[in-house]
Length: 466
Image (tube, rainbow, N blue to C red; front, side):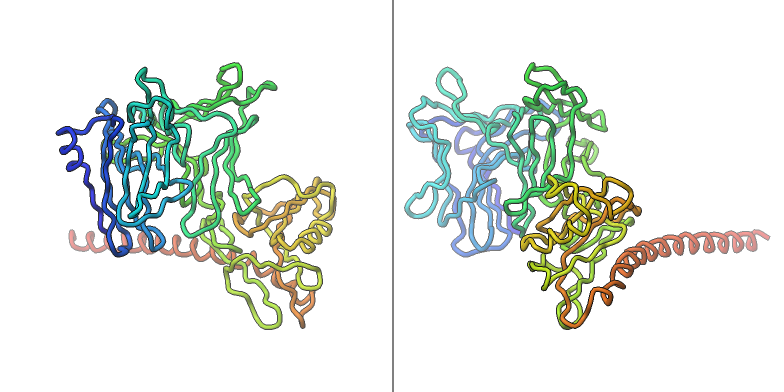
């Protein structure tokens, strides 16, 4: 990977050192390679905060990065090596030739590119009296007027990171995006809870929630990240809940992971010279929504075992496959998996229905690929709640629960009946158990080998001493 950092050059040309503000009329450009170079990153740091906290400072600048055979241009804020804000978080600006940042005489902040100086992003503050772009000690990037009143700030446009001292009001969210996927994660502040969601098309599924114990009929108004906790406040400005850090070191930021969707608090470790997590909402990989591939089961040993699906007419589908889009009872059937459930939750699709009705609801729904029936009693034949899924993800192994029935939709074989498929229901949990058994045998074997080897060495040492 080629990395170009123009931080020292630009700061030296401008002032001899790097300041935390830029005035109207300022313009700087970063050249873009003429040919595509995979992994290319070019950055020009323009601003830096004073060193007044443990760990690295905030730095602001423009970036050019190779992405999908093209180059993106963005305005970014970094805390050390961590990108804590970016103008291109939700919408990328692709350009050629150059990436230009300009604070116009009219007070608008622009990103431009290409031979025709096409505008790819702007703050929209033209005519509001803006005089300077400041990078505050909190990491907030702000446009201010002559009276130092804020006209625009990056804190109002959160990405996947919340910084120390930052507030997020209810109905706002942090978002992150797994690479090479159409899915997305979201951390949302709602009136009665804060929660993590997985978005798939128009559907969303929660996989972690926190409800304050002291709501007392009042709504959550905002949350704030302090030095040791995420504080939750109501509309009377009274703290009604908090999620605390597990370590005494002061927090620097909260992040929603792009790859995992996990929520974490991070502090700077002086010993290791990097940021480390002091709290995570989900502590096991099996509780993550995308721990395994589609139609994969996360086992007790936190390994993935694939559901082997039956293909119409001849043999099997691949071990882990993309979602199977089929509908109609003539072309599909529901396959129940014993001892598994999904970490994904949504509002019930139907309530007070039996498992059989729940299965049929999924069969008749072309977008449904899996269903979960939760019986009100310890009997799946009794009525309960029916949940339907547009993706077969977040499935994990659990102890048997007579109230839960997780089912996936599979193609119906043209020459195979329901009874002929029944052995798969028994075989699937056996495969999951075998995976755990192999892991356990390897561990026990390693321990036994170590004990035997140690005893032999002890006997040899004793023989030499005699």
